[in-house]
Length: 220
Image (cartoon, rainbow, N blue to C red; front, side, top):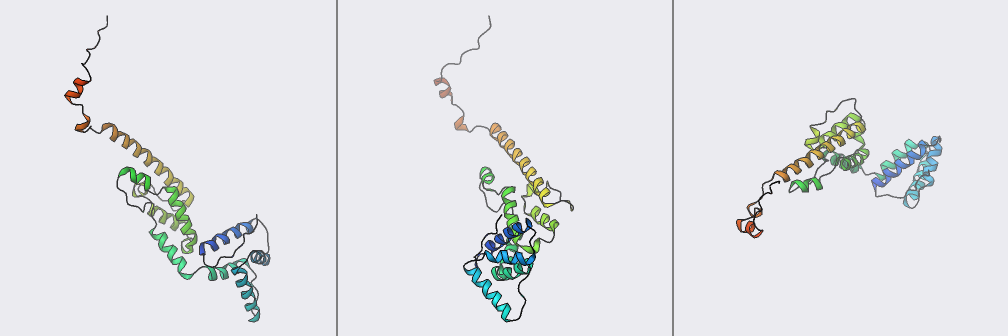
């Protein structure tokens, strides 16, 4: 597993994605902190390498010690490549995120357009992963996730404080599947029991045109 290269300067998500991949590589190897810094810096190019060289030179001229740990390097890079407003925007998006954010016109369209638990979970994890203020408590993440679910799913889920996020999502998926089955059965009953319109009921003329009604045969 190789460390990916990095050059972006105007895409916070691209940086955070790169940082995550680098950490996955470091977890697979027992590198020293100083080697982690060097290995990450080797993969800089374009704007990133120019910025890093200038930073290194500036620290040396000012009598500051070199960046010596991966944690320190991450803090410096986040300050440079993630704008201050970015976390606020993500936090606001996460706070307003719900499973269904689109208006619908009828029952079928609602079933087609609504966000599934799987889609909601993916967007929730994407936002909560970068909105760092919400990552301190797994329980707080669970509470926020439940608040964004459809009401008909939310009322079926009892959140336990000791329950993990993965277990909660699995519970929501099961509840969604149960509701989906109930909806399908309800729709089948509606179609079967719905009375035909007057124009669907055959008239006397149509009945006569179809021929005389044959009397039932009597068994010999």
